[in-house]
Amino acid sequence: MLLTNLELAFRAASVALLLVLAVSLLSDFRNVLAARLGAAFALGSAAHAASYSVGVSSLVAGWHAPLIALSTGNIVVFWLFTRALFDDEFRLCWWHGLIWLAVTAFSLVGCLWIAPGGNVRISVTVVNLIVLGFIALAVAQTINSWSADLVERRRNVRVFIVCAAALYGGLNALLQILVAGSAGDVANTINAGVLACIVAAIACAMMRVDGADLVSTSAPAILAQPATVDESADQKLIDALMRLMADERVYRQENITIGALAGRLKIPEYRLRRLINQRLGYRNFNVFLNNHRIEEAKAALADPTQAEVPVITIAMDAGFQSLGPFNRAFKAVTGVTPTEYRRLKVNAV
Image (tube, rainbow, N blue to C red):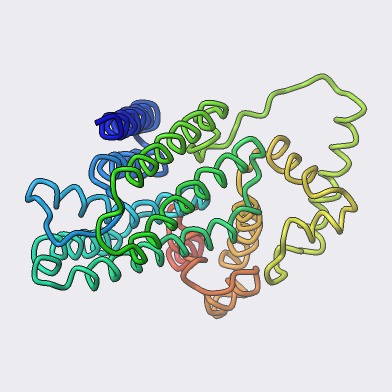
């Protein structure tokens, strides 16, 4: 009885905290994609907290199956949340919804038909392998995009949120694959307690960072400050950085990193991050590079002498690796496609 009550208390605490996080994100940042996906992930995690148990069973109550399915589909939301959290240019597509629907539906079918039909181990193993796959995708893209984040206060918090959720989800998926039968009240109580602690830690970490820094993609205001020796030194570094961009066009280099750029300026990487973020107003290094690339592309597209040059050639000359990302980035900045921009400039002459 004590273990049962303790487990229920842990589950209730997790659900309550997750609901508060979801409401907070939606009330303050409902127009920000990362916040909406974060709220959806919190709600899916609440379904997990209410429904998850260690071990497998072929018998699942009818009311319990939808919660388990939503909990499973939440791994897709987690993957999308990490995409939006680290990529300011990420946008949802219709096929993202189809992936979520397919994973959720398969989990529901597994609970109601596959497992009761005597294939419980197959159902549980396939579902948890899917979970592990999406966790691996989320962690990989977090590692790949982490260095491009220029806002120091949010970088570590973002990584903590992703790693904590991925570690818990990954261990649970492995446990479900390996454990046969029910694991008992002790295991479920420990699991519920660990989940409550992780949710509390994530909530605490989020409260230590301004919500606008964590999920908003708008540029921060650059406050005017009295001239100081440090500011004068910063301005010299910014001038040197702009010369590298304008004269040497280093943004054209394939896979140019902020570390390589800091090396060219002979300053620590953290200082260059701070300069680009706080002095120039950029929150993402890739956006900083792409803006310079797009300015070069705009000049080329408006140049009558380059009217016959293919758009893809102009894009690759400016530093883009393929046409798709160039088209998306160009339209995000100008509001029109490169071809439309060229036509408008030609008609204006």
